[in-house]
Image (cartoon, rainbow over all chains, first blue to last red):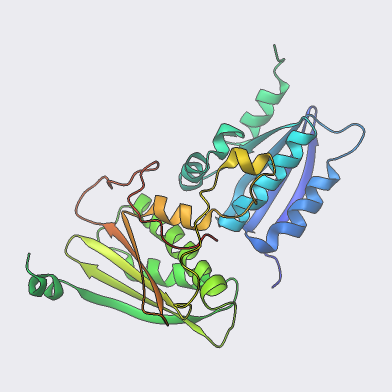
Length: 120
Length: 169
């Protein structure tokens, strides 16, 4: 089944942003994992922002993909943030406790602004 | 309420089937959303019902009918007294329902001690006000219920009134 998910990688100081579009389901595995792999390297940003603004559907398999990205990022000592979640998917992040491990922001600008702030 | 009164209060809003192919849960959720529109669900309830229907249909396609396109998943949308109910039936009534369900735990998943998947049934239960599972040895049916007679669903974001007797996605 062809994927309806597209993922672009953007970089800002201190963060890599995965801009997702379409559906985060089983077919999103390849584009999502490939996009994440692009962010890995010697100078990789310590923070990954997953932007859901243009995501119109996510199912349990998609949640598993996000868990996988989060697990990999944690092994690389990176933090993960999410932006642009609808109220419904915010609720799902809370139910699954993803929001205990992924900082949730209203939009990418908020997530980036937080990235730019010095940490204690 | 007597059983006769209960039966009289049930209105079948729609029945349809989808082939057991990955992705057809989207067809199911769209159909259910169209049928259930303007039937007393709040927008939040509608979103939760759509997610529950999608996840239960995925389960039926994958685990019940084993992704065989020629085997349908049958879906019925009902209006009952104070609720919208959706039944999702597959042909996996003889599958091992006695397998213990794995309660998803994100901390275990992040440590690699639990598979990343396994959220489906957990989500279904969290999304709706009631979930019942029945089987007759051939057919396996999940019935989802969402109350329409109250502004706030008793099963909020952290609520869970569902029964836990089906396998996980």
